[in-house]
Image 1 (cartoon, one colour):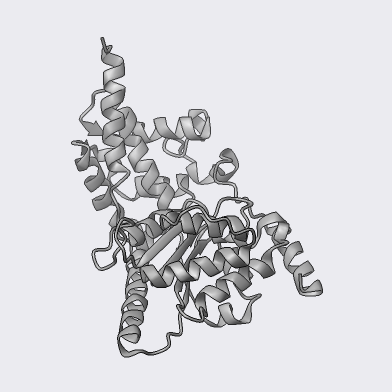
Image 2 (cartoon, rainbow, N blue to C red):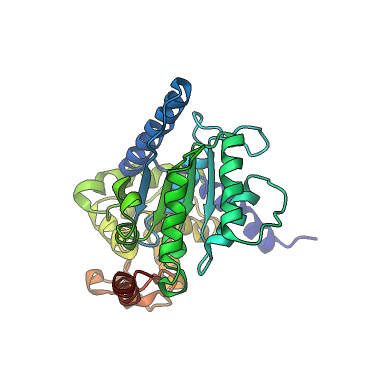
Length: 338
């Protein structure tokens, strides 16, 4: 027999799972979507006319927590104009994530697996990527999306920079079937791409900006109300006004993805407590857990919240691609060409 406490947690988890699927179309996403569709339809038109396509590398850059992964998933899975059902013969987009310390060879196998291609016996990356181009042509793929691309290019302390960039160039310049790229990664990605002249020449950069009161302050009240309503909740007066929004932006390090996560996770204690109104205390509860902090260092409770260094309190958002290591690798690459 299920105990009441367990049932409450189960119901809350189900609601949170639904809230995680709520997607907010920010100005940055709308710009990305428009450029994505523009390239998609141009590729279709060129194919129809028998033209050779000059494909493009879209770079979506932002720090961890800025929302890059959610945006690429939305493009790959939820655009009605784009075919993404892998069970169909023809698909327009393939999306993969580059795991930390991956290799060009392993990423190639991952791409083939994403397309449902049988296990390959190819022993080297050239054979794998040759198979990828053939599969792209057979399936009529127009876009390859790679999330966390900086981990692919910069893996193993930069020893595969040349190989990774050359591989991306070969996708853009495919002899029989060139494909557009959407490369998502940390801001360093734009600097890495400059090391290959062809990829750099064909790049277009979309940078996810930090949240600011001037640009985003008025938008967050409707977003907060919308997400709360999806959970059947109202919001309290202490969540209205600029003071709360300033605190939310500060706690989220001005990163859009983290700000949305704060809202969703604040709903959890509210539902677990059986409340119908979301309050600032629920945000403070999540901050206590996330930052492991006393109330005096809680950005939703402290009078001097601006003096709290939230980036020092959490390690989960640490950038695996450190600036010092990157600069050393870039210097070595430029000096030695490898």
